[in-house]
Image (tube, rainbow, N blue to C red; front, side, top):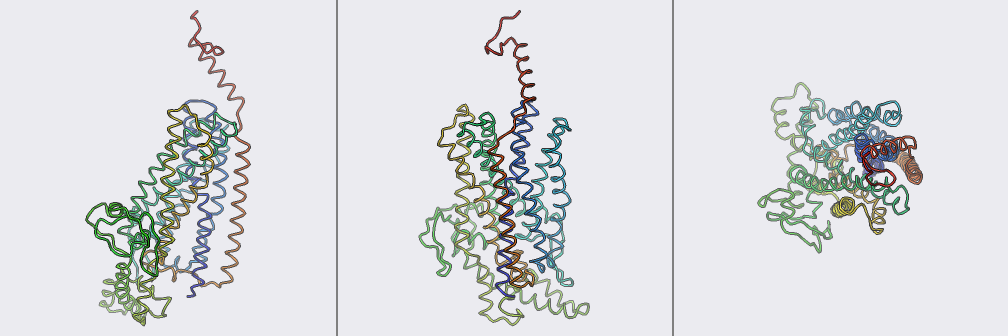
Length: 538
């Protein structure tokens, strides 16, 4: 298969996925924040909280619609650009995607309409339930998508059937409770919560700088900073869980992220900064923090983390073992029902490494004819781009800790300094609005680029997964997607800016009614609403 075809297919999917993920984090986080604000409204009956719910809900709605528009095309790409992948693992991968569409997306989409058009048709409690169902649906949708993606990172609960030449599910519960999928879900949704919190914080800070909508802005900062601080702390803690999971499910990815070429004596150090050199198999000018990587990766002081060079040698051994499985598989394919049981037994004994034999496909038509040099080249292909992974991971981590600092500062000012915020801090809050998206995109880059050369880790190489399309077809569709998605992104930004400039719409009648009730309560308790002091009892 042509390398150009595979690389173009990867580029197209990467661009559409990263465009789509511009919308996803804000949808996940805003859905929860809006539900929290409406909960406060129902509990306090104060119109300002209804105003906040409607305003931030409008921005959620804009983002939600465009997220749906960009997400639908991604699932079609599995059939268009990755047809062999769909054939090979569709029985497993298709199940969580189907459940996501039938269960989570329909739940979310149905109640979004009720949320926006049900204010005057539903009671307060009923509308609150709708708001929470929208939030649950949004996050539930992410769960099933990440279960599917987690299976690609750690393919449990499935096995290869030599008679159908496909992967088949053996345990839905293993797929569902895959440790990688669960870690990715909580890490990803927490990152979405941080994104929404930074967005609400930044827009609210802008209003305070402009001396507009101060009541809404201060309350929004209070909610966003508290929620964002908890979410930012969760991202770091759950990111640590992802590192621990990678230490025994994706060892090569972890070693590449650390620029760790040689296996260190336990506990391994964490390389804070350095310059990985793949040609020299060395990380230059490395600044190491003792023990940290060992604690993150193994939760112990005695277990080693293998380096890249040892993992390449292990991959070469697995390729040779996989060739035994591949030879048996070809015999089963040719002889079908007449295959001797001894051949099937041989396949079963070596089938775990079948995918490694397929790494030879770009070098030779029949892997069984591969030379030692070709086997060594295929083993070396299991090393992803070390320098991009190394730096993407560190920038993401640095941003993650900066979010903790920013949210902690605003939470402190909101909770203990009467919501008084220095102007420099408000400018900072506005300036960092784009940074959570940068961190989120880098996180996905680390997850997906770090899995290469595999579409399904250890099972199906990327070079085998792509459809047999022409380069012209891919270039035309790639250009079309980029243009279409860019237009959608520009539309979203313009709509967001328009409604942010417009600001919240005040419900005058409800505000006046609340004010009248408030004054009656003050009078009944012996307080003069105008003077603000107690009046003598009559």
